[in-house]
Amino acid sequence: MIPDAQYLQKLAAATMPYGKYAGIRLVDLPEPYVVWFIRKGVPEGELGEMLQNVYEIKVNGLEYLFDPWKK
Image (tube, rainbow, N blue to C red; front, top):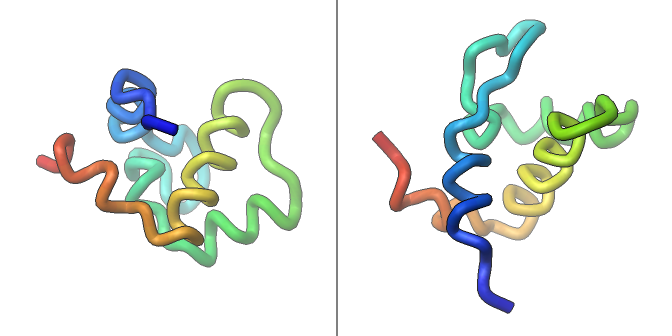
C-alpha cells in the first residue's frame, strides 16, 4: 500500500487547535499525549481522524513519512 502523499502533506501541516499544545503540529505532539487521546477518546470529525492516524504513525515508527514536509 502506497501512502497518499496529499493526505500526508495535509496531516503534516495540521495543528492542534486547543489545549496545552495548541498551535503545535499534530505530528510533533508528544506520543504520550496522543496515546492519552486514543485512550480517552478522540474528538469527532477530521481532528479525531487525524489524531488516530498520527497515533498509528508514531507507534509504528513511521515518522519518516513526514520528512518531505519538515521545515
